[in-house]
Image 1: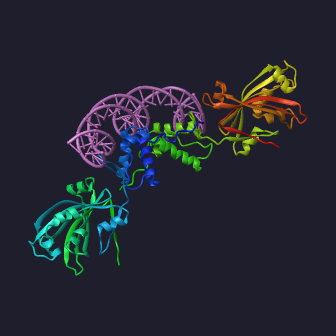
Image 2: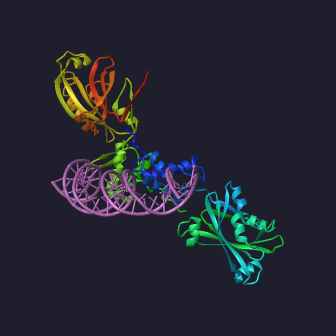
Image 3: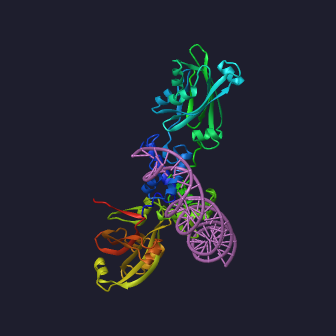
Length: 242
Length: 242
DNA sequence: TCAAGTTGTCTAGTATCATAGACAACTTGA
DNA sequence: TCAAGTTGTCTATGATACTAGACAACTTGA
């Protein structure tokens, strides 16, 4: 009456995946932390690296880990809780979650206001604007990409200012604006286009939350308007009805 | 974030085996009961019959079920608790467990007492004896095979009497012996030989418990002596120190 | 700029899993 | 005695799992 091996009939990659998942669940691998390399995992489980890759692939599909080519595989953090208040600051929200906020300039250019942009910013159509493309991250994880428009007259050289400030709050402070608040917010959803998907490190066909918002100064005068695309699988918006 | 199929990475035969084992554990398949046919199981799990056979094979290897060719596959009952008391009756022990006791004559012949047999039966060496080979079962399961020796003078024609009585207790009653008790018991273990293995429906190489015992009448006079070989995986002896 | 370490991708071979069909061997009950 | 139903065994085929090795593509830190 020999004891049967409890693992017979269970694929090796499944055993590895279950082992890693248990490690994440009980905190042996903390959220955001880097897992051991695939080669090392293969050695500890005495298994081929391809088998480890299959295990990690299933975990990644379920959103538990995220592989970064050339760097490592990281434990995927829970969704970022993103409260939508009148005073919404990305850096404060991320910092409150114990994570490190980053901003990164992708591109800055000039363009003229369309009718829609002009209405949002209370300017005339054709007014010169500065357009800033940026990505914002929590720790290593890209959260959203934003296209921001500001008046080129009021915020001269905003592109290079943002490049060093890496934060919209600091950019506005640079121009003497100590406080601002959210004027309007509209939320919709879409599928990430190719460039957004690349910048967000999203698989093709994954959804994004599209947020159109305008920030205003304490007097209610529009300062900036932007369209942000959030990786839907990494955030959840909290609507606070106050 | 689709929920992963909990069964991916688990072999089909394993899922079937686990399902049947759960059925046994929670009583859907009672001990000793016949399982549905392999074809029927294959249909309910929507799986090939060979896959079912593999599942059943692993359960059989662990002793949970027992296949009988041409008949069916049966839930292997728990080990028969076999108390070793001065008044030990196979039929009573089995009946107390809610199972149906059977005795079956294999062979009866005459031979003369060796020195050891003579000493056990308090007879002279060379005394004619009747030797009975029998198998005892609980429900459908063979529990033990026994070789029994009695005095041919005191129990004439014992072989044919046992063939119809199918019980040692009834055989002795036939000769006017209303009561008897266990005189001596010695227990050892061995590997089943080919003929015992066949009669006990045991795989080759499986152990048997060998019990040498002598029953005596109320005055302490030896009546029968026997050597029984119990399928070790189907019984456990309870020694009651009183 | 470079070396080390990482994940991504490809080809190839072996073993196991699962299905399919056929038939033998056996038991049971009519 | 026979028919129906059972488990046992065989061959064959395709899919999946696992191993093995090599190299590309990329990140990181010195």
